[in-house]
Image (cartoon, rainbow, N blue to C red; front, top):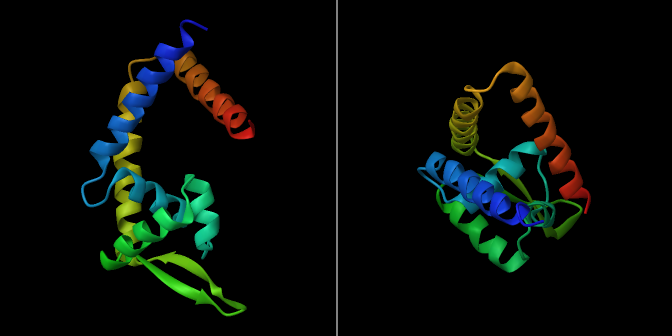
Length: 136
């Protein structure tokens, strides 16, 4: 247990730094919101807020900011006008693609010095850990 805490904090800091350095036009939180919207066709605001772990009030402010930047569109759901659906604009999609490419390149760079076995082991372990953490 003594080795887990420093590894957790170091890895968390490194991942945050990679994400932060990939975001020129948006914050890390906004990047995460845009990414989640890109995964589902017209998700509801509540669905995306839960996915990023944010309360709906704070989330609504972030959505307002992203709308002003013309990165997404908020549309009332026809079946219930209290529900809003989110979709990316072409500019928003381009930003998500750009951020994903930068993150992928930086992760590839970090993995490049490993041999095939080490690389596969790390990627598989990260996948298993992510699954376990998501399930808890």
